[in-house]
Every structure is written in C-alpha cells, then in structure tokens.
Length: 100
Image (cartoon, rainbow, N blue to C red; front, side, top):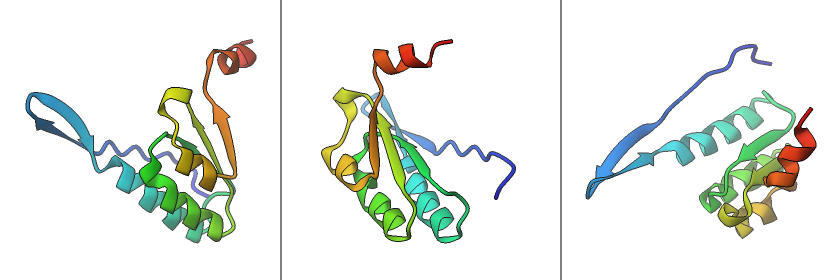
C-alpha cells in the first residue's frame, strides 16, 4: 500500500478565450485501472460525474474492486452510476450529516 499522496494536475488549453482542463479523465481512468490491477487499493472512491469514466469503472469492477461514485445531482452520469458499485449524491444533507 502506498504511504504517500501524488498530486497530478493535468494541463489547461484555451479555445476562443475559454480555458479547459485536458487529459484529467484519461489520467484518472488509467490510474484507477492500473492501481486496481496492482492491488494498490481495496475500494475506489470516484468523485466525478464524467460518463467517459464508465468503461474504466467497469474494468476496475471486473478486476474485483468495488467503485463508489459521488457527485452532485446536476452533474451525475447515468452510465457512471450504472457501472459503479454504489452512488452517493453530494448535497446539502450530506454535508449536514458530516458536520460535527
């Protein structure tokens, strides 16, 4: 098991004066699958509503690792929820339950 946290920021690209993150979903998918294959975690916790991650979640589950997905209602992906072992909606009630 790893004892350190690695931060990877991806890259930014500009199109018509607007900035977008690029490559982050691919990095998340690659890490989730590679680390599941290597047995580096027991449960994947994915905080994303990006449906493009559904195939990676499917593969992680095929490798025997559960994947819990959390996201706000407006940004959730039906496909990602279907592939995940569990879905947790991030809402005000969740934050209230977590408050000391």
